[in-house]
Image 1 (cartoon, helix red, strand yellow):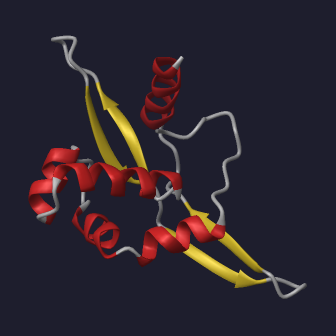
Image 2 (cartoon, helix red, strand yellow; image 1 turned 90 degrees about the horizontal axis):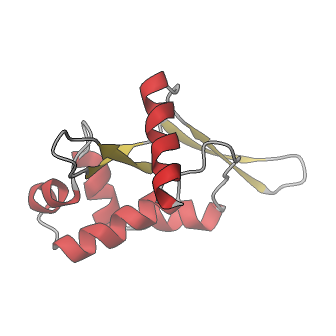
Length: 123
């Protein structure tokens, strides 16, 4: 579900619009002051868990949320979700087309390692 740290992913404008237009997605965004599990978000947002997973997938595809893997000594890892944007800008460019820019927070070494680990786990 995470972004490829080596690729330049740019979500389509409509994907971002759809995520931001979804009331449950907006509720999830408002609730995320720190990384949270889907279960925590489900409970805090009063949204069924299955719906929460669908909304998190939508937000991830829009590059607004990222899935992080919390490594535990027990060997059981937990997925936590965190906001992955500081601002969304939609501008009208020279040829009168809409241009999307998503400002993302600066990547810390820990975040880079987390994204790399997520990609390794997928393969």
